[in-house]
Image (cartoon, rainbow, N blue to C red; front, side):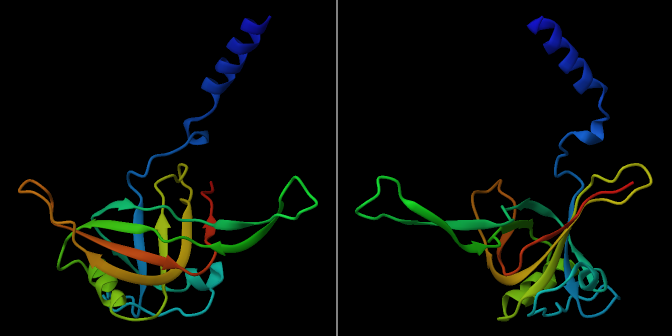
Amino acid sequence: MKKLLMTASITAMIAVAPAAFANTNAGATLWIAVATADGSSTPLAQDTDLTQTQYEGLFWTQVKAVGNHGESGSSTNILTYDTWDSDVAQKAKGLTNAGDPEIELARLPTDAGQSALRAAALLNNNFAFKVVRNDAPAGGTPTIIYNRGLVTGPKRPNGRNEDFDLEMFTLGLQQREIVDDAAA
């Protein structure tokens, strides 16, 4: 009976459309908000929290040649307090960090998006970003993840003779991300 249930479960999983499974990062893109719609490399400061509608109203320039985008999302501290009269620690939620992803790029000196990142790194402002996933169903829209934060860098890992010319930026995200999931 157990074997029959297992076979039925596996058959049901196979029958599910591939879109129901996880996607890779291949084909995803990173964007930075800029001052004008003409492919500008001038980043536009965003020093207050934005709504999804406000993010959607911004002008965006793609940051090309992204090789790696570090971890983002929320990580909340768990506070612990021990008391003499208890054998189990008391716990509570503390502050939430919206993330500090490191962005690794193959250096393209003339790319408008990379130029905007370099310019943003020189300023002490927050800037808006979006990641557009490559997960749109046929005729639908992809997942878009919005956030904003500080930019630092670039660092250059340099390396050996066969390593690529890379730059690395860190985003100090200051707002909980807004995720607009893929839709048909």
